[in-house]
Amino acid sequence: MLQYIERRILALVPTLIGVSILVFSIVHLVPGDPIRALMAESGATAEVMEAIREQWGLNDPLPVQYIRWLSRAVRGDLGRSISYKRPVAEIILDQLPNTLCLAMAGTAVAIVVGGALGIASALKRDSWLDNLFMIIALVGISVPTFWSGLLAILIFAVTLHWLPITGTGGLKQLIMPAGILGLVASGTIARLMRSTTLEVLGADYIRTARAKGLPERMVILRHALRNALIPVITVVGLQLGTLMNGAVVLEMVFARPGIGSLAVLSILSKDIPVVQGTVLFGALIYVLVNMVVDILYTFVDPRIRYE
Amino acid sequence: MSEATLREDTLRPSGAKLLRPSRISERQRALLSLLRNKGAVAAIVVLAFIVGAAVFANWVAPYNPVEVAVTESLVAPSARHWLGTDLYGRDTFSRVIYGARLSLLVALAVTAISWPIGLVAGMLAGFFGGRLDSIVMRLMDILLSFPTILLAMAIVGALGPGLLNSVLAIAVTWIPFYARLARGCTLSVRNAVYIEAARSIGCPSRRIVVRHVLPNIMAPLIVYATLRFGTAILSFAALGYLGLGAQPPTPEWGTMLRDAREFIRLAWWLTVFPGLAIVITVLSINLLGDGLRSALDPRLRLER
Image (tube, chains in turn yellow, blue):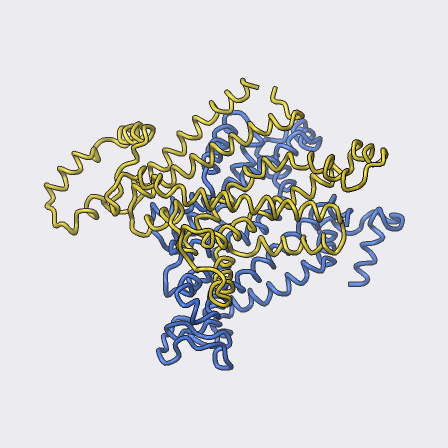
């Protein structure tokens, strides 16, 4: 087991190097000279620009620049933001709680709603309820997340006046974005839950439990659900991409501060260090969580064995 | 249709005996199966309307989608403007129709770039294995290390917001999905008896790949491309909404919704209709994809 974990972590190294090269190259794909763009307003002369270029090491060969950038990034130094005039890492850490809050609330909604729907449709297999859920799921994957957010604003804030449109802080501001994020991610969970519940319900130990005269409620709660819930752990990994994609868009829709809106706004204001920082940070989280989920899964499900 | 259904029925093992072994080709059988799927047929009809409106937008749209008419600002849906107008008095219905043209073209472009690249890379990696396989798959792993929208945003961040750059960004993020599927399918046919037979009679690798592997991995890749087509429309609209895709005044669904956000209290129609257009289009594409999947996969077909 330890060996497996070790190998999983080692296999990550080349991937992360690739990721960092890709993120590093963002700045060099930008058309035009970044220094000239930056200094144009201040009316700096060519000599001044050349001096700055030399000072920042922009005249060095790319591999040298990359190594320098990477060794700083590894130590948590992601450079300084052009528009915020602050270290990028600091800005990201400032915004992290907002996004984490949204993501965790969304995950909770997704697990509760997806789990309930999945179990319900498995228990009532092929009923009208099951069919209705299937149709809702199909429509669900065809609706853009940001439009669901706009519709929620239109209905719950503009028409019914139940909830505030935007902002952070209170629970009231979290209900709409987290609810939608959760619903978006719940479709996959419901499908997974439905199929595992069906699988478990067909197992021998369920038949045994029924045969020994346990009431149906007990059979389902004690025996079926406990085993059907195992894959839910992986759901966090499976849906992580959906959650992150959704969080970026929903933060913009609800004008919530967070890593997603930070990334979008910095692209729009051409604040490249922040773009690099947020993208690198996002990819790192994504890769690490996926790995942890993979490893957790081997603990939870003893049937999975890796040489 | 009824005769077609009848013939299909006699061919199904679950139905009556198989009197004559198929005179109908596999392709015709798949088509029949597709036409018996109500959801898929409805989707085809709806898509025909959407594609028709997109192609003939110049004639279908009652107004010029970018023409400003200050006196008609924020008019609610009426007989003159079926879906109302925006701040600049531009007709929402006309903009939605031109938006359909743009979204379909973009999804086509994204597929045309990423599908062949992913297909070839995945197929060759799967067929030849070894060094090539590890290089290609490592590259794909790197691309898959980003949540899709983040990678697209990184690329747009580098190239700058805009229509073409966002198409390119989505296309790049799509490649690994096709490559993985193509590789998996190739691995499953690589050791098939007919490949071995071809090899034993001295068939060169190139010919085996083109004549034997490619046709046999085509069906799942086509189905997947159809299902992804809808996702491409969604991604493009999302980038447009974030301000990273098509730029105003281009009539694009995501960009229209971005503009609508400001007037959400004043003009509900600006928020409702472009979104509905996205949902109807993507839902139809997904229904068609689902139908194609069951039609092209013999195992699913027998279950129906």
